[in-house]
Amino acid sequence: MTVRRKKGWEIPEREATPEALFLDRRRVLKALGVSGAILAAPAALRFATDPAAERRGRMAAGKAANPAETPELVQAPRNPRYTLDRPLTEELLAISYNNFYEFGSHKGIFRAAQALVTDPWTIRIDGAVEKPFEIGFEDLLQKVALEERLYRHRCVEAWAMAVPWTGFPLKALVDLARPLGKAKYVRFQTFQNPEIAPGHREAYYPWPYTEGITVAEATNELAFLVTGAYGKTLPKQMGAPLRLALPWKYGFKSIKSIVRVSFLENRPKSFWEALQPREYGFWANVNPDVPHPRWSQAREKMLGTGKMIPTRLFNGYGAFVADLYKGLEGERLYT
Ligand code: MTE
Image (cartoon, rainbow, N blue to C red):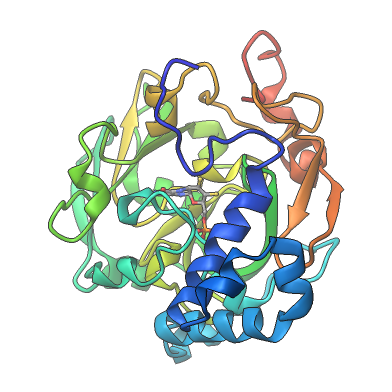
C-alpha cells in the first residue's frame, strides 16, 4: 500500500464492516444524546442491550435526510426481469449508511450531504461524440422512460445491501450522446465545490470523483442511471440527482451526483485507482475468490441483518455480464 493515511473503507479485514457500522451507530447514538458510558461499552453488548436505541437512531437519521415522495418517480413501473435472492435492505438504514467522500470519510455523511444543491443540475456530455452538449436533469428525464429495478449492491469493504432503484438504462444516455466509433470508454465525474463539500478541501484526494467503464459495459442492459430509491427522489447522500448503479462491480464504481459524461478513446483513471492503484483497479468486478490485498472478499455482510453470506461471482449477475470479459483474461478484472 503506497498511501499511508488510513481511509474509512481501507481498513483491515477484521475491522472492515464491524468498525464502519460501529462508527456510524456511534454517531447516530451521539446525535440522539446517548451517554458516553453507553458508547464506551463493547459494541456487541451495547447493541444486545439496547436495540431500540439503534433503531430510533436510524429513524432519526432517515427523517432528517429522506426526501418526500415524488409522484412521477413513485409511478415508475417495476421491471420484473431483475430479481433478488434476499430481502430488500431497510430504507432508513440504506439512506443513513453511506460512502460519499466529498462529505466526509465516514458512513454518517447524510446530514453534511444536505448542503448539495441538486436543482438546477446540468450534465455535460463531451469527448468523442457527434456534438458535445449540456442537458438539465429535468430535460433529461423527459427523454427517458423511468423504471424500478431491485438490485444488489456489493461494496468493496464487504458489506452489501439490496435496493429498489428508480432510473433508466445508461444505454439511453449513450444513445442520446451519439458517440463516435473511436469512443471506447465512458468517464463519469462528480461535481466539485469545496464551499459545500468539505472533502473537496482535502487536496490529498484526486478530485473530482471520477469513474470509468467501457462503452460495451455502459451499453449492457444492467448498467443503470439512478434517479430515485425506495419509490422516492434519490436522497442527496445517495448521489442525487443522478448516480450510476453497476451491480456486478464493487460499489465504488457506482459514482454519485454525476455532472459530466465523457466518451474517450483511452482508458480513464478512476478516483480510487489514482490513490491506490495496487488495491483498486479499472474493472473491479465482484469475485469472491480474488481477495482485496488486505481482506477477503469471500463473504459479505448484509446491512441491517448482521448476517455474513457468501459473495457470488459478478455479484450474481454473471448471466448478464460474463461475456463482456471474454478475451480479457489477462487483465486485472477483479480488483
Ligand atoms: N460517488 C462519489 N461521488 N463519491 C463517493 O465517495 N463512494 C462509492 C460510490 N459512489 C462514492 C461514490 C462507494 S465506495 C460506494 S460503496 C457507493 O457509492 C455507496 O453508495 P451508497 O452510499 O448509496 O450506499
